[in-house]
Image 1 (cartoon, helix red, strand yellow):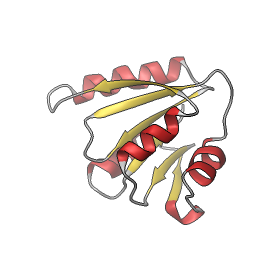
Image 2 (tube, one colour):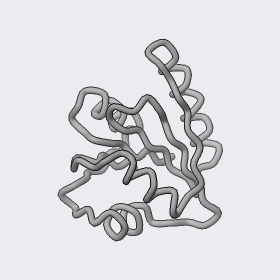
Image 3 (cartoon, one colour):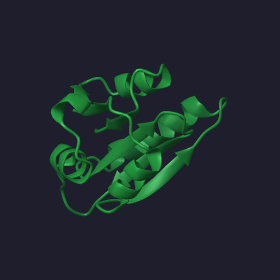
Length: 115
């Protein structure tokens, strides 16, 4: 289940908080390479499924892959406990492309992609 973050959050705060729980790798793109980098990122996410998640944020030309040796409840541990988000601050989607598309059109602050 993918998570669409609707509440504004400073990208640095989101990244640094996630790095407390996970190891991070980033995939930087520009206007020409976005689709190929996105495909590379999604392939890496699929390969590490189960203990990882992807992150895409507004106004940041990167996809982030977070991995962990242990399973962590992203909604409870990261969003609710560490970042103090409430249920109204995010929503869920089965569609992996939806969080990315909503961020791109400015309808979401960030998208957490879970394979």
